[in-house]
Image (tube, rainbow, N blue to C red):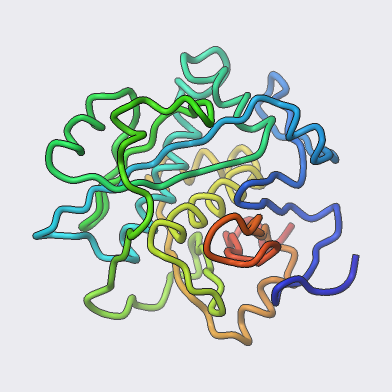
Length: 265
C-alpha cells in the first residue's frame, strides 16, 4: 500500500517488516529449518499467550559501556540466542521461543550493576560481551511472569553516550541502520537493534545464516543521513516499525536491517 507512516515507506505485504510489539508476518518452522511467511492478523497474535524476550545490560556507575557498543552487543545477543541449539528444534528453550514468535514480538531491555548483575547471571541465559558492553539475554518469559531477579530491575533511564563518534560501517557486512529522526533512549534503541538483527536472521538463506553465525555475528549499528534513510526504507530491506507503546509514535520506522545477501533478493 503506497504512502508513508512517521517518515517511513509503507511496505507491501510481500516485504518483511516487524513492529516492536507486533509481528506483521507469521513464521512456521518446517523440519528443514527454513522460514515460511504468510499473513497473520492482530486478533491471532493477541489471542495467543504473550511472551517477552528479556535482555539485561550491565551498567556499572564507574564504567558504563559506550552507547553504540551496547546497541551492537544487544543485537549480537539476540542473534546468539536465536541460533543457540537450546532455542531450536526440541531444545529446552524452543517451546518458549515458539510461543514468543507466534504472539506479539516483545523485547525489553533492563539494566543491572553489582549484585543485581551477578543475580541475573545466575539465571539461565547467554551473556555476550562487546568492547565495553555486557548484555545477557534470557529465554522468553510470560509477559506477567518475569523471574523476580529480573522483574525488579529498572527499565527507564538507560542513557549511554559514545566517547567518540563511531567510525563508518563496513558495508561488506551487516549494518543495522537507526532512524535519524527519532530520539530513543539507549534501552529502547537496544531493543530496536535486536529486532533488526532478528529480521535479518529470518530473511537470510541458511548458508548465509551459518556463515554469519560461524564468524561471530559481526555487525554495525549506525545512523544514516536523512537522505540515505529515505532510500533505505524504500529499498525492500527488512524494516522495523514500532507499535508506539513507549517513547515514539506508533508506526515509526526505527531500524532497517542491511546485509550484503539481502541487497540482492
